[in-house]
Every structure is written in structure tokens, then in C-alpha cells.
Length: 217
Image (cartoon, rainbow, N blue to C red; front, side, top):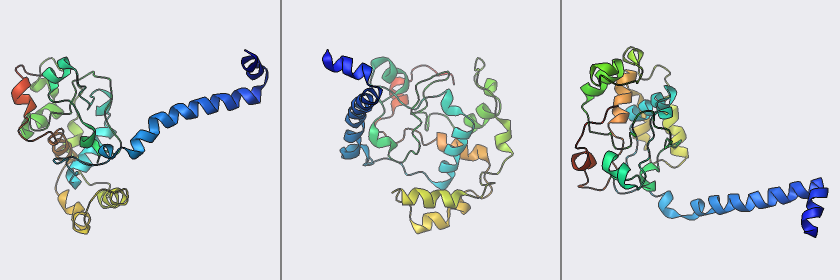
């Protein structure tokens, strides 16, 4: 109690005590992630984003898709039965930033890759009600009119990610702009959606196993 009273009466000592305790809590959370190899090692099927997919991911963030759709399937029976195999850390090694999220105005999208055709996604993005009558998702018709590389910065993005440890080759970087040539933002976004969750173990096709009912986006 004497120490408690001394802390309450001494503002400087109280601030030091708060910082000391919160620092310990922070280190307990941060240090394991710095030394746990599995958190920074890609899995066997972990996908390095191609330039078009990377551009699509940036569009996904720009349009705020991650505010309504999470990309993190928790190891709970209800979630696995609805969305598929639960998410693993090694599937997100090349994600900067992470788009896990927790708010689900729409369904989780981590295993949506390959579940629908490109044409389905195209119709859905331009007019969601054309394929899902009860959908509350807004339409994004302008994506089909904009060039995927209108900002002409895809090469710089790959160079930046290469410096952060992503294994892009010089050939990848030199050909990045070509990958986006004649592509629209809608093409890029669809390319990104189609690779979500494909890093699952071989032979595991979650939507074939668990999707007995149509999931409304």
C-alpha cells in the first residue's frame, strides 16, 4: 500500500510505472512474433502476388472492401463449415498490410478464390443485385472504365516490396507494367479476388466440401 500511495502522489513516478507495465505487456505480445519463424515463412502454396493481383489488392483497399469483408476464418466449427479451412499465419506472409478484419457486413472472403467465375465477379461488381438479388453491396461500375495502371506506379511498388523481402526477380519488376497493359481496375480486382485463399493445403477444396448452400455476397 505504501508503494501505491507513493505512486499516486508522485506524477512522474506514476507515469514511469504506467510506461514500465505497458512496455512489459507490449513486449510479451511483440517479441514472439519477431522470433517465431512460422509467422514469416511462406507455406508451400503461399502465393506471391503478381503485378495485376497486387494492383487489384490496392484497389480493394482503396474502395474500402476490407471495411465490410474480413479475410480471416477463425478455427471455429461454424466458420469452418460456412467459409472453409481456417486461415493460417503462413498464408499472409506477403500481405502488406494485413486485411484480416473482424467486421462482416458481407461474408468473409479469404476462401473466395476460384469459387465464382470471372464473369460472375464482373457482373457482381457492376451491379450486385444482378446476381445476388438481396445484396446490399454498392455497385462499382467505374472500375471497368479505369486503367489498372493509370497511376503508373506498379514497378515502384514491386521494388519497394522486394526491399522488404518479397522474392520478386528483376524480370518480374521489369515486366510489371506489361502485366497491367490493357487491363482495367475491374480486371485487377477480379484477379486479386480469384487468388484469395488458394494457399490452402493441396487437396483441400473448402467450397466443395462445405459450401452446400450459396453464400450471398
